[in-house]
Length: 352
Image (tube, rainbow, N blue to C red; front, side, top):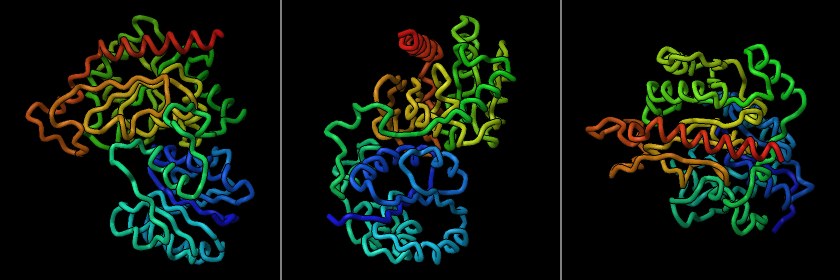
């Protein structure tokens, strides 16, 4: 295998997918310790990758076609000798080819004809493979050591750097909201890109009230600016008052924020994977998607599901006559029990 010196990873989105690819970055760094590794990513996730310890350069790109094409001259001038396309779409495959790099690797079953642009294609033995392990197949094809059982590993494989400045900013944000960092608090992410991934707001509200009424911890709603309406819907149904930080943090600050949380309660969404990467216990609610493929990676997490014949359907619209039965079948009692159990484990660990 050549000793690659200038490596480009193409994985522009989304938040969860970017986090899933971090162990592949770690494996490539170990295989090619002297290489300069660059990551092409959408501008909105650049701050998150700036916390990746083993990355030399973050290359942000605007998500439009013109934004992608405008980078081609500079990408060609960078003289990469290996391009790793983990996105597997026509645009990412074409950009890999347009870099002029002689070695371009991606998945054999990638979509939109993108394998046409690769010089090396990696087979995926089964679709029922966690995204982290699927990406690691590419590193293994490049003779990188990915271990024998990566799913049993811990969050260290993700190598997200949480620095003092980020911790200080999070501490200040929480303090101004009435939350001391030393106080147990439960992060709650009530939104998701797909409507079919969202546990109903009245269910979240009931669980949040019980958490606060039982004094398990302070509930802190989190999310991006475009998720404020979802948080407001939950707040409007609550008897108790949560802290609402929705839209108050950037993706780059999310590792520090979730590191300081006691537990994250969430739908299947990006913050789930950031929390797992920094070692925070996750209670995840899964309906139309498969936790085997995109559940919290590693140990110490709880995934709640309600089995129905049509799940997982991987659909953005529900065709079940009992709308969102795969999610509404998950009760607030189950959620509360899972949060209570994970919180007890977390607090016991912190006392050691």
